[in-house]
Length: 281
Length: 309
Image 1 (spheres, rainbow over the protein chains, first blue to last red):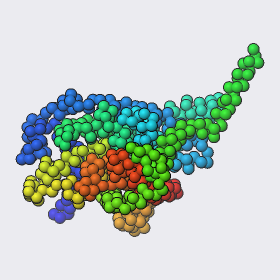
Image 2: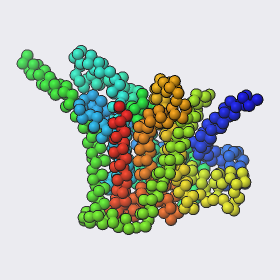
Image 3: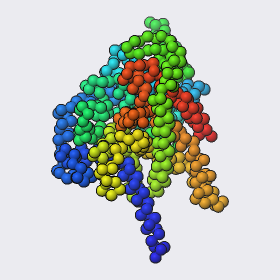
Image 4: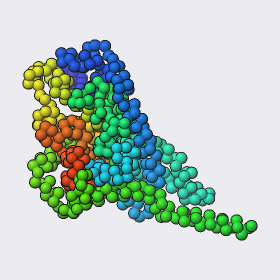
């Protein structure tokens, strides 16, 4: 009897442990979801069971968000910032990553690590001087300041990621192209780049999600509502006076979280390989 | 006619010849990225040091040199000393909690079971979703009146409505809350790092050890732990750097309160340098991060080198 029970108990405790982790990780998001669809009468009644709807679900918070706040504007701002930062990052990090992988000679390793280490310089060390520089060039309180500053952390990260990828492309491909009369630069453009599309797509997705996740620079540089990106707008602008409107807050947080969550899950493995610098193959 | 074609050809050749030198092309391709970083990371970094040595405020932008006065002023303030201690408690506490959760989570996810992919996708959420948004959800969960945590504890009979804790309003509890939220954000990253490390340990090494009579614990602590140590250290350094210098969780959850009980360096630098406009003193506060960052970077360099052996 005991022999039959033991595996069952072991299995049971395994799944209980898994359930614990899932609840721990995902409950705040479930809480966002359910709050966003609850009516105010349901939310602010302490005798109601909070985990489920006691009154019919409602879309009033979403309606309020799009009609009475600048939510749509913040989404647009984030999209514009994201696209511009992706463009700047690609134009600088692709050549840099390739040069670090192939061309820079003996110093490449040191240079690569040097560029990567700038990713560790925290925003809270740079935000004071950067905000002075931004005022000096007239970008204060404008979302374009973020377009200028965000590449300071996306370029190091993406150069490192792409360097790792370019190293895996066999040299023979370029050598063959050069023998066929291609220039060194031409072999990179015509042979290596087309092979690198998956890595470049990863860089695009990660640059975009990094711009969505950033909070410190946005908080420091921007105070007018119409210039805020989505994360800053939801976190700081939906509080009127001292009163929190949790329905609207959670609806806004939910909409902004979903695309990032999906993108991360799709590209997680590549991201890990990048951050550990190819330590694990 | 022939001479002209020859000449242009020649010029084209010379131009290509220069670009065909790997070192020159390499320098050209690297320069945009390096210039961007020098101008917008290197220059502000030097400026931060200079501000900290001056009397610069946004109301009186003078670069009047005052030496180390800002640092000595800051060190004499009780709030600052409290902040420094808080920053260490916050960082170390959340890293330890995050690592423990990460190790156990990784052990669970190592085993294949139905629905593993979905479980992994859900567990990664805290790390993927913008932390500012998740923090707002936690703030709602810690609400003084409608806290779902308190509701559950009351329903379970652990506490009553009258002695329900005000999570963000009491100094010790508030510190616990910011640590929990930060550990919660960090533990999926720790899981992923542990998983990457463990799956990279060659199976034949483990098999050989088993044949030689090594049991589960011995395999774990004499083979797996030393082999994954470099990669886990890199992960911990990442987590430590981002926690030690962060302000978003503290800013949104408590804004350093109640009465500076959760004040951390990043948030204090923001309050003094941006909100109050005393750029010089704010820069001095932020620069106190530098010694810790420096040590972490040295460690990082050692481990990046070591992993290649």
